[in-house]
Amino acid sequence: LIYESAFREAVAQADIAVSITDRQANILYVNPAFERVTGYSAVEALGRNPSILSAKTTPRALYAELWQRIGSGQSWKGRLVNRRKDGSEYLAELLIIPVSNTLGQIQNYLGIHRDVTELH
Ligand code: FAD
Image 1 (cartoon, rainbow, N blue to C red):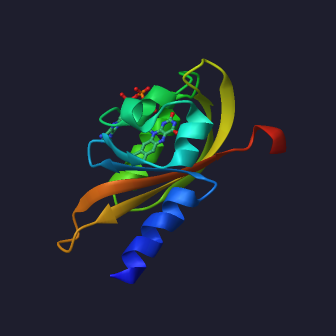
Image 2 (image 1 turned 45 degrees about the horizontal axis):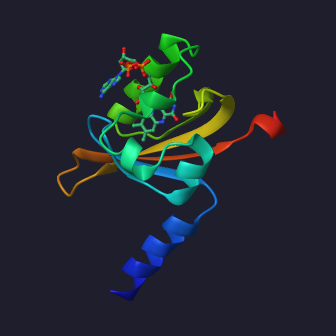
């Protein structure tokens, strides 16, 4: 199908970090912009939890709210402090979208984020 390869290329070339996880938040896919923004290569990121990006300064309550929302099928958008592989921090504007199967069960999460440190 032509649109499938077009979609794949669009995500691969997008200048915004994209990750796809399973329901347990194990990373299944990252695009090249994710590798550039975070410093983690796809090979390093695959199978890990996006919490590898957490600067560990974000209040637990924010993550609890995030998981409550996405676990109930709603998307969540917010800003958090992320840490790159090299230890440097950046302000991330993150959107997480739950992706359901035909039975309405959450199968995956789509994460899209960009570095907004300069815009802050
Ligand atoms: P965790 O051990 O993950 O838990 C913190 C709290 O979150 C828990 O007390 C619980 O309430 C809740 N929780 C965690 N995992 C689950 C689960 N599987 N089901 C239900 N509730 C759960 N975090 C970032 O810091 N930066 C990111 O860029 C980022 N991107 C993400 C992208 C996607 C697609 C997804 C799904 C998650 C992303 N997260 C991101 C959130 C990340 O998965 C962690 O939950 C978060 O970083 C906190 O990690 P932690 O190890 O400190 O706490």
